[in-house]
Amino acid sequence: MNRRNFLKKSIFGFCAASAPMILPSSLFGKNAPSNKLGIALIGCGDRGSSFFPRMAGFGDTKVVALCDPKLWRAKALAEKLKDHNPIITQNFLEILDNPEIDAVAIATADRWHVPISILAARNGKHVYCEKGLSVSIAESQKLRQAVCDTGVVFQYGAQQRSDPTFRRAVELVRNGYIGNVQDVYCVCADLIGDLQESSHMSRNDSEIPKDFDYDMWLGRAPLAPYSDLRTSRWGGYHNYGTALGFLSGWGAHPLDIVQWGLNMDNSGPTHIEGTGLWGHDDIFDTVHSWDVQAKYANGTKLHFYSGTKFNELKPCKELAGYQVLFKGDEGHIAVNRGDRITYSNKSLASVKLKPNAWRAYPTVVDHSRNYIDCCRTGMQAINPVEAAIRSDSVSILSDIAIRTGKPIIWDPKTETAQDKTQQDLLMGKGRSVREKWDLI
Image (cartoon, rainbow, N blue to C red; front, side):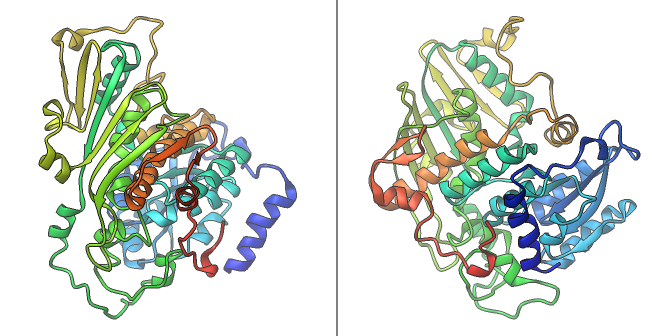
């Protein structure tokens, strides 16, 4: 199916019908003849090929299709999943138009996350979307509307919500075991490590490989000369035409935990300011080496650093070696991956939550398993669309505050900034979108 016919069917048809195009529950789930959920992966690179085989191996899923503009990546993953005999394609529009597919996992480069998620939702397909989420508030708002209009399940790929250690930290914070939270510190990876890892790759223009749809890979991003580095995971992460860099791509992890721990899944900070660097070269030009300071309406302060800037400033010794630190007026908790958690008071380690205490989720979950279960039951996933949008908004706000060089006064209820120039930038104005790929 060509792009124009797809749009006519999936977008204009959807609007004309003015009703959610959700697949009947009888087609899958416990009452389905095959009892298998039809799933597909869009983006078969490092991240997709890491988590998707787990989804494929649950026993109640059927991999219908694999998609990647770099065809050899889809073929390689198909070989690993050959028992499913999946369809292989470079064109994600074919995935979204396939009635055998009930749910998709999106692990493309960042700029495609939201557009494909929106089109998938409009076609009644549940969505698992990797991070960072979006490049503008306006895109995020369109995603929210699409998910709400259709009622599909949305799971954000910030998988630390399903990590027992992070869940434990958040439950203790939310239930008041460190008192009123006054400050939250968080830190994440920076551009510097990726510059070193990718130093062997050429930045010079080169010939586009066979079986690579470079035009599809670029999508909405501006036209740019092909090079192996530009289309590598490093170039994809750190080019402003295609992503926000690790402000969102890695910042999604600690910021998601911060928002969750502060009970801000439906809100966000009201004042954001920061400093940072950008413009390293024509490929690596996202913000790096940042120091972001934000404040919520209740007075809680957020301190968000890149790894290099944290090591330079050393603003908080309790955060060293950890990803997130919650500091309250009665103590603190620091948490990181690898089951690493420390408390200001060792007695917190043995706290048993009361029966009526707030809990992070009804049951202990595996992130991918939670997605599949929710696709079947219609229950809200552990990391739903609103939580994804709100944590990602902190990254977008940080980026624009740094680039404009002045604080953003932000109303999280209306999602508007006081300054019109900043508001325009937050909404994506000034970002060129190629007409051919303006699908949303």
